[in-house]
Length: 126
Ligand code: FES
Image (cartoon, rainbow, N blue to C red):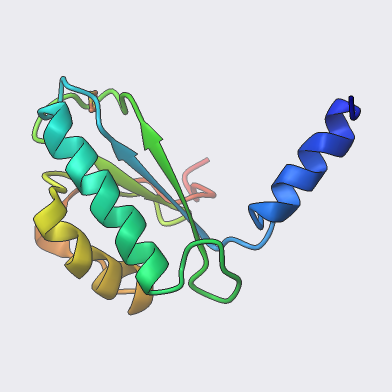
């Protein structure tokens, strides 16, 4: 049985943790949307990131993705947040994912009409 640190370091290496420039968290919880809608968006996000070679990748647009159960907003979902920009999106159904990946993650141009909050990290207010 490998030591925890040794095992986790190996897993992190396989996942390219340490190489990412962004982290996208997508809520699939059933308080902000029907879970089937959230899961469809998640599958589309996984597929788009893979197709565009942003997932399990290196380079300036390398992106880690995480499916979460609640981001505490709980309406008008699926809710999605991108760090380090801290850009909060609403209504991120599967139909919106391809445009989001292309415009925000590849071209660096957030889609203003789908954004409801911003909290860049590190937060210059603190
Ligand atoms: S269930 Fe999606 S934000 Fe709470």
